[in-house]
Image (cartoon, rainbow, N blue to C red; front, top):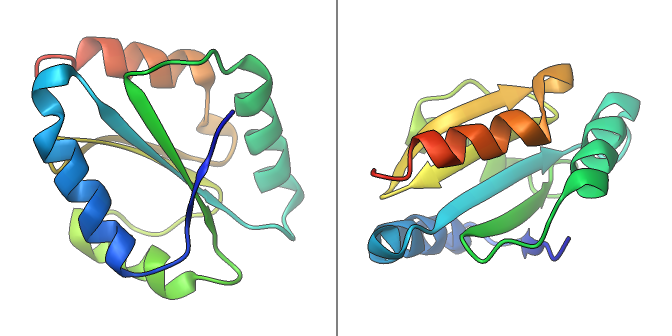
Length: 120
């Protein structure tokens, strides 16, 4: 899985803009908030990566929570979603239309949600 790393606060606005500009092409932005010290987070990330099939309609971003908590706080504030770790969010047309955390993170559910929200 080819992750785009979230390392700067300005990238949050960039990914929101990308999701708006590319909404007609069906692009969905995926954000995975990962704690490198948490075994549950590592398990959720490994499960997602093991099942991931390359998909041009999804642009995945990985956020290292231990080093970039301010970015996580900005994401939580912007999308009005309480912070969790691990956590996955799907963004399209500038809005979060799906989020889940911990053992609720599922490749099948993520892809189903993307398919069901293709018209956003």
